Length: 360
Image (cartoon, rainbow, N blue to C red; front, side, top):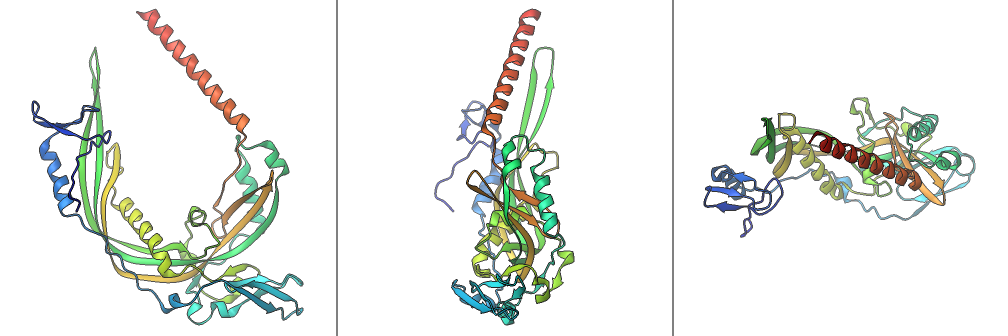
């Protein structure tokens, strides 16, 4: 624990002091007051602050060397040369267009435990893009008219699935707001609380992207995948699609898995919805038991489009159809919109001022 302690105002984050006249702690910036007794629990929590204890059982496949290099294969159908990297697991022949699967990348310790088969096809991905563009009034009109799809790829993306029982000890800062008024004034009262929650929660199949080629944030944006529809892995599911074996190991994925476990635990124990106006996590201690990691392939459609020399990437969950992707913004429309808001606010301010003067 740190040798320095500071009490911060939960309202404005300013340093609070003891007010000898009122015998209370008081913030000199926003005038919020606190009973001294109410801060005892904060001191105790700092004294008993615990560190995280998160450990995972990692399989032997994690010890393999995953450095990328070029791999060359010969198509059995036409004899053409297929060039990929060592992580390529499924692709198609550039000469005869036949699907090919590099079985060695999915055999032995490299064999995935599960696969979720594609449920939506390329046509569905195209339709999802057009639906995604509708209603975006700040989108440049020319983007809708002139952008073209460079490629659509159906890819089985490698994921590590983390599961465990978590023993959590959480603290939160919360507020409740109440108000009343009389003939002269309106009053607002804000009560501040320091809350502690502890218990156990089980996590299953927390996905962490195992491919360096895929942006983690993009992959998380198309979650969730429905694990109820998972199948035991078979290479047949890969035919006609692209697939890579993982190049980010389970050990390298632990840090991201830990963050997701902690965030999920904070949400699970959060007192939000219990009448509090605000709830802010303060401290969390997570101890993992029975940690396990499985390897799976999940279906993803990747669409790349080009407009004004810039590339835009979209992703669609190949099972559920959830679609995400960034879009360009028409700056003229945006600033015109800001101008209209400013004009409306100015007109409202003038009307209120006029009404006040009229009633005085």
